Image (tube, rainbow, N blue to C red; front, top):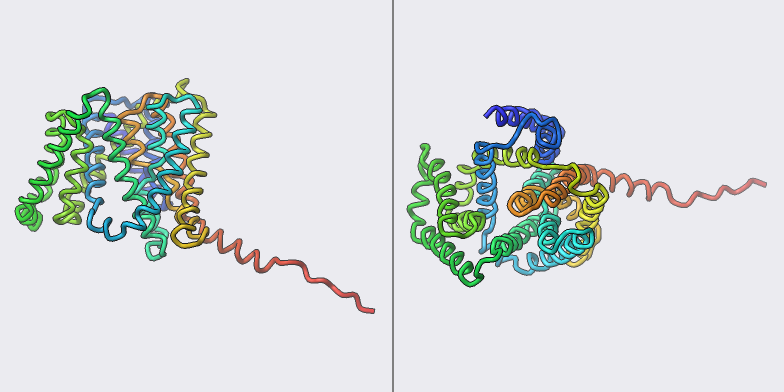
Length: 380
């Protein structure tokens, strides 16, 4: 228990610093965990209590992912979603997978690294758009749809990785049964859900918490991934009043996610598992691949490489879903690689997103003011 208190106090200080500097706090939580944990000072260790709270952080994170999957809005913007999403998927997943495999990871490890490599941080992206006052630019909607498409792809990745050596037909049947049950309860209980959410006492908060935790427990009893079922619950609840559910679940998500990130860092072992060169290559490629996919998306949708650069600046940072993949399926070398990649890309992304506009304007003014030198004519 003392470890959680120390970790939370350190993260509180880091959160205040990050807010003051208007940069994402997630990489600092991971760095704090590395410093406090096995790879650093060794003063905080993971235990059953911290593992429980970390699990809560993961399932509430995935519940929020589900709340963001609004099928009706996706269908209304099908062309833009598919175009931007497929470019982003093909460029980043292929580069990430090929690079990881050639650098010595196994096929399964390369898939995990590639999925983490592909997934931009929704939390960092949205925060960047808001804090840098870019929500009104035309590329912002494309960026949001990219995040939604990535979430849909990663649900499929979770299903593939969760299947393991099980009978695929039986496994798929169990998942479909669980999904059908969740959507039936949400559909036929819609009026009940809305009546709960309309109350102004503690009941909506208690109901939201119990619904998420009970769904995870039900999934484990059924023998299917609790990650998928919690995402499905969020998507089902999104058909009622997603804003209300976000409001009631956010306190749990925000606190538990801090514990999730910091204790992920605590469990990381950076000594001897993987070479610094391999991690450096992955980090550099992660930044470069988003640049390629961003520029291609900007040209495809807007006929403008500059629009692609705007997309790139706001999608460099990897974060919560990448860490979730590392926690759920990553071996120690994979987890260490993903942790460093998240730290590097999120810090680079926050800097580039914050200063790209002023730098590009500065270069533009310089190119206009510093043209060819005027020829001086001698006076005879």
